[in-house]
Length: 493
Image (cartoon, rainbow, N blue to C red; front, side):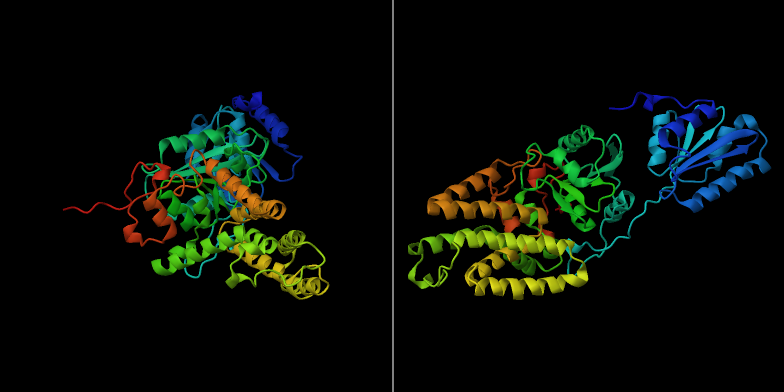
């Protein structure tokens, strides 16, 4: 809910404005909120800003120019016009409500009040603290750009604009959070993106009612989905500007949230999460090979362990040529329990790697592989084959380009393992069907999650399996309903 005094007009009495600002943003209480009063042509002028969010040198330059007015001007009646003209900055705006002033000051802009005037001048001198663009750790490529999105939404829009110098690229800024007032930017190409899709996303963002979104893009993502407990990602995250721009040119919409280096791509399907920029930085044949290997790895991360468990529990399912599959000794612990323990151990290691300082990560890996793994085999807690197949499955999980999808597949894999372990072949088949039906019923903002597999689209499926050369990729995917279908100008004659 908006506070009633958000619409309070700027008073011509500068003292009232000062009292309002002291009460609302804590002047003289919060050390990072700055205030300066000076006299221009015998009238009080006040400046408000937040330390750390503004360019100090620019503020000092503006103050010098304001004070210098006393030396060259004498017309008091035209003081507001003089001040507005002397605010040498590319973005100067006059606002009429105190709520707007507070929001802008807390966003890193500075506000000037002039005694006797019912408006305030807002100057954009913000410089948010943050790192410089660098290659994302989770989306590295052998060849390609090394820049990546940062926590600064202004830099992120600039990185996108640098790659699409089209006048039809739109970056619409909204604010989310009653207390955080976080900037959220919706980016799309006007003559490509579907108007209904853009309106739906803006409606979703504007309908968010929460005090703040400290978790940035992930918090916004959860308001997009109707199925709050769904483990599968219904939006795609990327920190690479080239990946985001390629989706913009297909007709997708990008959502950027200030303070987050990841942007949200909407809508997406299951197969969007299987793609990686490396496939498009290599030749089409090599890119296709990489893509097929990744598909195989994802398939193994899901189905290798439950299928192997089925063969161990019922060796008659195996042909004679594969009769060697399965542990030679049963061991002291049932195979199903061994698999669960090994899977949990892999997750322990993954979480430990995240929280372990980099210099110690190698040592931790050696301890896990040499000591824990080998000793577990020697004491009979785990069989060698269990560790082998769990390790292969884990590698398949890490090969999955989307971290969110890999974790969701991990949960689905455990569900399949439990079905096979407790109920055999019937349990595996039932669990498999439940998993597939669940994916079929998923939608990402009215987009079928398994498209183009279901509903089936032969040409789109061909493009999913093979990395098509760019000159032949002349149509945008129909699933996003682009207004402009052709990516390249049609040849004449």
